[in-house]
Image (cartoon, rainbow, N blue to C red; front, side, top):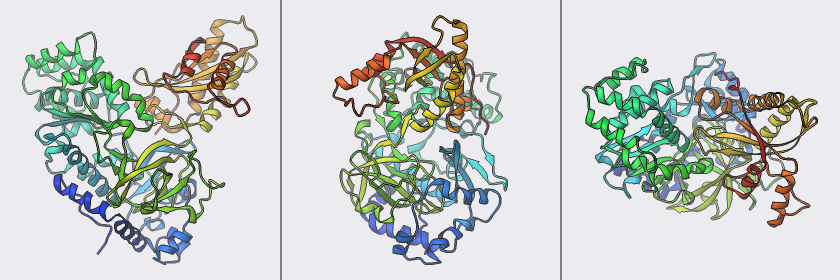
Length: 606
């Protein structure tokens, strides 16, 4: 029997029973997973290089190194160019997933096999039954959950390249799923599959408004995406009400699938519903707007941990703090890791129970200051890697994942590469145990300083971008110091750079100064990675980069502030990122002499 196969169609109480089973037998499930992976993939070129056909678990742990994306990228490129899947996996590769993470400025590509969709579906089927234990009756209404696909490309040999969510929404697991009262979506499938995000958003919001009295659950994958929907609604509610009032879809919707799907929802005029919505949306303040538009809503589902925590105040404003925020699961493009079994926890208290049947988990211990406990980050000693059942309460770790098609750590990707180490890894802290499975609190992503949506910019990339951009100053000025922050006070949010500039000709031409600073803005953006530029140009989920020029001496005042708060003068380093609503940000904003934005989108192509 293939121990890697399992029934992903658990629903309701059966899904909860399976959760209890796998977490109560975490060690056994993990052992079976690894043995099954080694048996299935023993003949692959990658694994044979280290294990010579052996299936021995101890030899795997001793001989197979923890590596990084750049080490396995050549294998992926060979498969993309048409070589056989047996390079890395015993099962046929069906598609390539495009990660939100990057390597060398380009998105990471992850081969995947058909069974991966089974495991993702298993996690999706768990979420609402877990929440229903705390908020009953979720099977009595509808779900306004905003889903979107992205345009796909293909490899030279014809394998589709998709995002993980596009892969799921285009699969039979989603499109042919049996009716589930816990997941009765307001959005017709055709509106989700529309690749024009503007038309898709319009139709999904229209459907949600039509069903407003039946909606019991609101959400999107990320908090940032849900807030973009609210911002879109602020701009379009008048037209949406007109469609409901007349029973005719706006002519801006040209996608045939959307037109067909919405025709049944707009079968007849509904002026009473249109009046209700107009009355609510026309009020001077949108505080609590979600409670008013969808009065039966019991919770908002979205990722609100990590960098998404910056959007919590906005969500609480629009819900007036009356609708709980639920962060349901911990997942990435590489694999889905775990679920939140206490969904009504405050966002700051959320912990995720790792699901032992998702993949084979190992962990790299980190020190108390969340750094690696060994010197060479490129080579992780095999004896430093810890099994899932051996992690210690309160300790910090970084993930190492062996999936059914590959091995990876943190947010690095593969469908059968073993022991892949992460270049930008998630830092997790053991917060407890659910039965025998560890529970982790997401602490941060190592090295990331700026993030608005899917973008993740680390200090090194930021410094490199600014170093190249400041050449635009040429002989006119020089950059004395800089820092940054992610401004999410409006939607979409955007990167802000604080620059202290010494102009060589202080009384120069103001128009020339503006032109130079705008050139610096776009030069920084052009040097940021693929995902940032995609968010800026295609997704519109990140706004134009802003440079705020501050008075001479501002960074000296910043240093004085930090030292007066207990910092060491000998060890002082200018912080390369400051937090919103912090005293440092207030100081910097209080010394701004000019503000400049990127005049155009950065270049980007699929």
